[in-house]
Amino acid sequence: MPDNIVAILPELSTALGQTLLMLAIGLSAAVLLGGPLGIWLFLLGPGQSLANRPLFAVVSWAVNTVRSFPFIILLVALVPFTRVIAGSSIGPVAAAVPLSFAAIPYFARLVEQNLRDVPRGVIEAAHAMGASELQIIWRVLIVEARSGLVLALTVLAISFLSYSAVAGVVGGGGIGDLAIRYGYYRFQTDVMVLTVAILVVLVQAIQLVGNTIARRLDKR
Amino acid sequence: MSKIQNLDPGLPPPLIRLDGLGKSFALPDGTRFDAVKNVSLQVRRGDIFGLVGKSGAGKSTLLRLINLLERPDHGSVTLDGRVLTSLGKRELREARQGIGMIFQQFNLLQNASVFDNVAFPLRIHGRWRAHEIEQRVHECLALVGLAEKIDAHPAQLSGGQKQRVAIARALAPRPSVLLCDEPTSALDAETTQSLLATLRDINAQLGVTIVIVTHELPVVQALCRHVAVIEDGAVAEQFALAETGAARQTALGRALARLVAAPPQEAAYA
Image 1: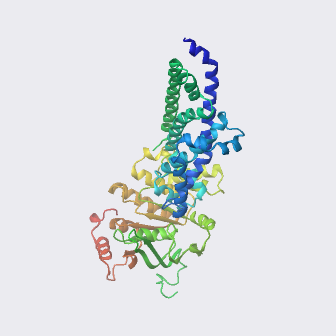
Image 2 (image 1 turned 90 degrees about the horizontal axis):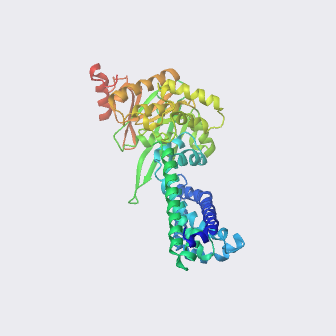
């Protein structure tokens, strides 16, 4: 094994752990906050049960606005906010703050779009049976859209795996940080190849798991 | 109220009573379309009542006003003495348990099994225990002849079977009324016939009052006892199907009279 790679092996496992930590925090925030935001956005939409044109426009605009920031700008712009939330502006936990900030509206939009595929008549039938708004969310929307939602989460996970690599810029650590520090700044091409290979494997694994779960959940 | 025609004075009050219902929709060009105009109707308990009319006549909107899937602009809906139009959200949800509904496109949950679909209305109303739900789902599926499909998913069923699951689902909470919105329009003639037989059984054996919207006159002939012809958002005429003495005023009414008078082999779903 090339010396360069042997030298970074201990760091590699730390970096992998940091990447997974950033991803876990970012995805959790996306599901826990972006999920409800997406459902709300859907219900505010035209023809839905909480339809409210001005509020829909405002929420939709806010989602688009956050999504239009290049991630690297968001990363830097949010530093003061990150310090308040994470107590520091460096390290994987700190990097997870802007990561989450970007992931929430991203996932919200994906959720909203997936819920639009739930046939209107099914929602209506639930209303006719006397279901409450909350019951319709849990027992109709999420059940009917579940395989699409899993695929949305898969897309999100893969996008944010590469976002987390950018987070290395602000000292977030992780695989991407390793690639930049050794592979790029020190011209260690073998390290670069190895880190990219790890990312390729991770992406393939995430997509495979996502596809498998989505297929099992889909009874349509 | 004098403006409402009481079908048979001396009988108990109607199960469903619509008073002066109106509903209009905003069109994209900014004008409003009056889908239902000042409709008053009464449906007696145990009846099978047909709302017939051409597409766009407002018959589906009228049906959807009965369980307030559409909110009327004016007028009131009374079910079994309870004024639905004055209920709050929670009370209306409660009242909807007593009103089953089936649709042209079945509207089943695709990702839920037949069991879970039929259990749906029972689970959303907290007072059913798990074993009661299980028992009731079996009962309802047996009633529509689909007991063996309990673990299937809707995608594995034919159109007629899907509509039977939808009927079982609608009947599960023991409703007094079943609203049917073009229930056979997506089905072939043979399937329609057996589905209509099931609806007749439900009416005869369980005493469930049925209100059905359809544009298929043979369906009306095979199923309904009373009919209202809807034209341009209003009731153009109303009659008992068996009563052939009086001259009918609408083209649909006359067509129905001809169908009823026709020899049996011409009656598609007799």
